Length: 383
Ligand SMILES: [Zn+2]
Image (cartoon, rainbow, N blue to C red; front, side, top):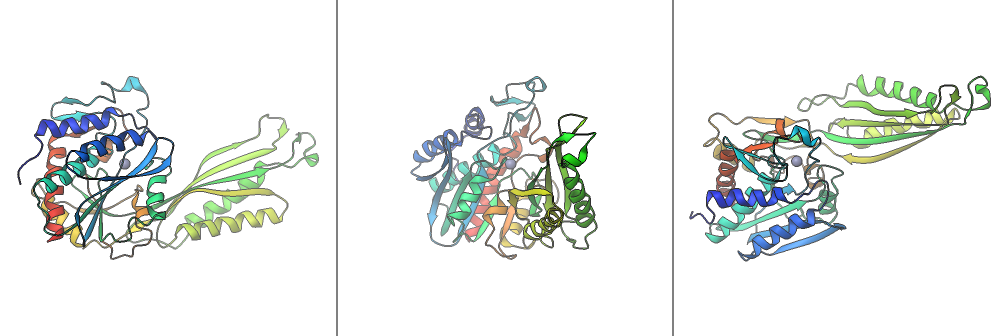
C-alpha cells in the first residue's frame, strides 16, 4: 500500500486531537476535526447530537457486507493535579520515543489509528468488498451516553464484527465485567439524641441493608469461570450532621461489578428485595440505579480475534495473549443485542497502566505500528 501520510503527519494528527480539550465533554470539536480531515479524502460523516457540544460520529468506507465496526471514544479524563505533569497535558510532547499528553493512550491514539487506516485504505482502493464503519462516541469515561445512543439507534444492527480501540497494547480482550452504580437514600426524622424515640434514625436502615447485602452478594455461589466473582462495594456513605442529633438523612452509594451468571437485573432484584424488607419495618429507603452496564463475554476464537493475534504478532516481539479485563468499555452498550458468537475484540495502542495517570504516554512505535496492524486487519477481514 502506498502511504498517504508520513510518520510525522501521523503524529501531527494525534497531536491535533490531544490539543482539543475533551475532558468529559466538547466532543463536538473532536468530531468537527475528524469531519474536516475525512472530507479531504471524500469520506462523509454523520453527526449525532447528544447534548450541547456533545455529538457521536459515524463514518464509513467501502460498501455492502460484511460490515466491520470499529469504535473509540472522543472524551478523555481530567488531567488531575497539574503539578504532577512534567508537560502540558494538552500538548503532545515527544521524548525518548514516547508521545506524552492526555488521551495519548486512552484513547486518542486508537481513534487516530482508525481514522488514518480508513483514509489510507480508501486512497489505495484496498477493500475488495465490505464496509468499515467508524463509530466514535461521547462520554465513555463517565456515563457511556454515546454508546447508549448508538444502541438505541441500532447503529450496530448490520455490523458483523467489532473492534474497540481502547488501549490494550499487545493483548487481546474479548470479555469484561459489567458495572452498576446504585444510590440508596434513607429518610428519617430528626430529634435530640437524648430522646431518640421522638425521631427516626436514617442511618440504621442503611446499615441493616448493607450488612445483609454484603453477606448475600459476597457469599453467592454464582461465579464466572472466565471473569471471576461479582464484586459488591459500598463506596460512599453519608449521613447525619451533628453528633448529638438523630440523623434525618443518609445516603449510600454502591458499585457492583457484574458477571453473566449474576447479571445487572439479578443484582437489582436482589438488592430491591432487601430494601423492601427493610421498608416493611417502617423505614423509608429509596433505591436508584443510576448507571447500569452489562458484562460482555464473547468467543475467544473468532475470525477478527485470531486475525488481530496473527497480524499483531508480527510487531509484538512475542505471543499476544487472549485475556479478560476487569474494566468496562462501550461494548456493554454496543453489544447489547449480540450473542456469544458475535466476533468482538478490544485491541488498541497504549498501555492501560498509564491511562488516567499524569504523564500519560503512548510509545510512538506502537502507535505507528497499530496503524499498519489495523490496515492489514481491516483488509484481511474482508477477504
Ligand atoms: Zn478509554
